[in-house]
Amino acid sequence: MANAPSNLPSDAFVFFGATGDLAYKKIFPALQAMIRRDGMDIPIIGVAHAGWSVEQLRERARDSIVKHDTLDPDAFAKLSANLGYIDGDYADAATFAALKQALGGAQRPIHYLAIPPSLFATVVQGLDKAGCATGARVIVEKPFGRDLASAHALNATLHSVFPEEAIFRIDHYLGKEAVQNLLYFRFANTFLEPIWNRHYVDSVQITMAENFGVQGRGSFYEEVGTIRDVVQNHLLQVVALLAMDAPTTRDVDALRAEKLRLFRAMRPLDPREVVRGQFDGYRDEPGVARDSKVETFVALRLHIDTWRWAGVPFYIRAGKNLPITATEVFVDLKRPPVGVFDDIGARDSNYFRFRLSPEVSICAGTRVKKVGEDMVGERVELVARRQLSREKSPYERLLGDAIHGEASLFTRDDSVEAAWRVVEPMVSGVPGVHIEPPSPYASGQWGPAAAAKLVAAREGWHDPLAEQSAPC
Ligand code: BG6
Image (cartoon, rainbow, N blue to C red; front, side, top):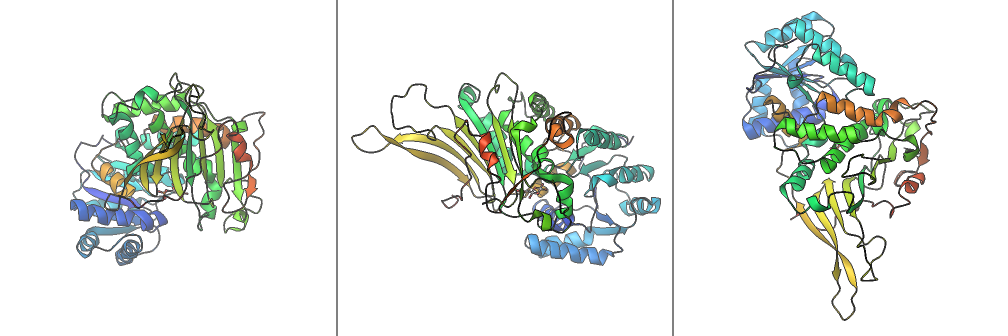
């Protein structure tokens, strides 16, 4: 096994999959941003098997930044000057020998595996044999496996070469400003704690809606479906931040320990409490099977068996081709125990609403008396909203953290496996339990009608709406 990395920042950035989609959409813009903001000045080496030259990669970087960000001439010139490229087969030792040479005197490279997990073993072994893993860090992308067994095997593959403290598993949701704010808001304020439990919280809903389809990624989506794509990772991470107990310190291990306890208290999904849907037209997408049973929508109920949350349903809903693109958490509080005023309807309880994307806001739903003689009120939402345009993108934040060895926004081996255990009944099946095929839904609808039945005992789904006011 390679030596553990020191606490010093990485001194070279290597990315496998340099000609691929992720590099194009996220990595090049993040690299330019790190150079612009922090003056990052280390060798940046792309690796791929595409028959390209370094000039072609530079052109690709330029295109990527023009398309997804704004080209900054100085920062881009520095990126171009530091950019190298190795073209070669990942199974060929010569590729790694060339990488070793390109790394020159770098002592602490970081290797980003922006490639399918099926190639992880070949690449980490290649790195190890060529001596490129010593003192190095490694970043791996989601999806981290397809089920509990494959995630466990991937962890074993990585651990055969890298110690756990050198491994950075990316979940870009954890790099979002609004997701970090969930943690901050919960534990920097005292007023929430007395009510943040089964005595005052009636239910929690998390909706991640997208008003677009699979955007040409049909063959990728066929391999994953909504549960693997966004529930096992992004949305369970959001649940963990909402429901975990306070860590005793900001220390990365304290935070990870509390999250792990929470993941372990989540009950594995009961297929009878899961509704899957598939948008009409999905089967006509390139790369999608004509009889595909892959879900593009899911709604489910999650149970958390702790003293804090026993009996409080956590509902999760996510899907493609829904009416809006928005991710929102809705924490519904219980109604007043005695009906002093009789104008309080079923949907008038207090609530907290956290808008995580695309806008960022925290809102508290309250009842306030209307002006006049009658003791009747109206719903008033207290809103704190932020404009985020100058903030770091999740990839800039996460890659920067990994380069500095700062691990708190990355998922540890035990947590990633604990999260797979929760969704395991839906991805691997349960003996004797029939998993219904996904029900069709029309694009622009909130999934199949059956999703409403899940929340029938509550007040229905709280659909995220377009945010009304301008950011302040
Ligand atoms: C990705 C999923 O992880 O997250 C996509 O693979 C999804 O299917 C995306 O669209 C959403 O992320 P964001 O940051 O655009 O909300």
